[in-house]
Image 1 (tube, helix red, strand yellow):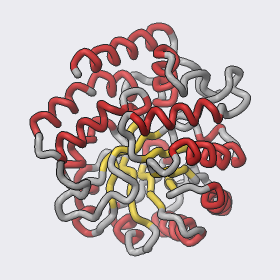
Image 2: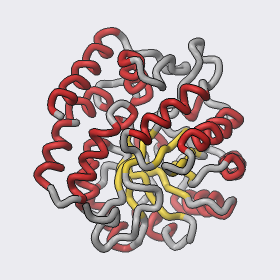
Image 3: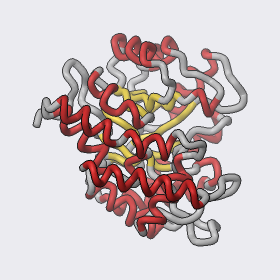
Length: 306
């Protein structure tokens, strides 16, 4: 196998295959289940994840407290024991609050930070850039920008991203903008490490020189996601394409069926009896029986194809 660096690109700063990890809760949803989080983290790393992203969209970060976020970092860091990078989300609609979360994450031992554009307030691009520079200046940790306008309501425009790349601690992008041309423009102009946050683009972005992925599907099928990247990096492009196609049904069921990834991932983890299953927090509701059956069927089809 070749090294982990895509031709003409810097080495991925956090590994290639990262999981957007769910946040396990106790049975009543009243507390973060740190023991379950540690068991899930260990399983994900053992089965191929090179990094874990905590307290993101799939991690239900909007419903966890600041103290829970920091405790989760400490617990997962202890569980992976240096075998994988540990990033944590710090994005809020308030720059001051996000700065506080960044500093708390650094104290808790995070290896990096993830931040989306402030949601709801719809700041113009100069304010978006100022927000991210403030966060990057707040700690000594590297920062991954999270471009997901479908959720935040605000795009991190390619020109803004290119300018932010000049900051020494802004090193990566989690790309959920569905703008492949814009992505390539930034990649051509900067050394930012691009990670797709859309499981259907794992192979496509890697083939374009992307660093890798931040995968929701990896919560339940880490080895399958890792196999796509490994096959491509080994030069087995036809095998990589086959493996990507084999994940399509599961990706569709988890990410395109009208339910958030946190709901679908936890449903499957629960059904399979794996760590990380259990309740979601309101306003989310658990998957219904029909959705759970469909998810299990898609998962079974992936196993059969492997």
